[in-house]
Length: 125
Image 1 (cartoon, rainbow, N blue to C red):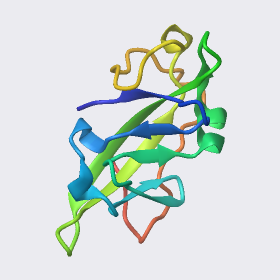
Image 2: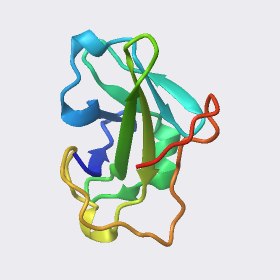
Image 3: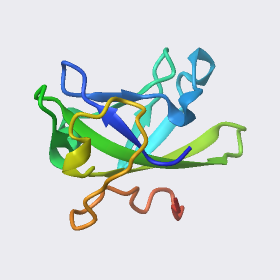
Image 4: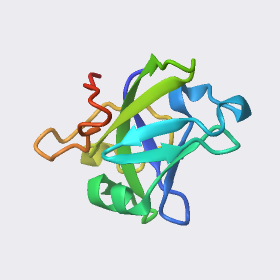
């Protein structure tokens, strides 16, 4: 899976299932977004904080922010997948995209939020 869109919910946070397949069995796992280690919820989703959605998102006609996200994984010592995510600002043409839509337009002039020096790991998309 490549980069895809995450649309904010009514509370302003964005939610996604890593690789589109995570479910209850992945609950408790962690995903690095920037310098935050976020927990995978009981439904297999990771909730992107509202502050990240507001800073890196583009506002749709419904007033909700959209971000683009790409992530990678490696198997950790315990067998859990160690996930890292990069958050980008989608281009204006995807301002009304739905969660899960593939990224087709990104504004490369804007900064992206990448995992930063987390546990001495290097991140690559």
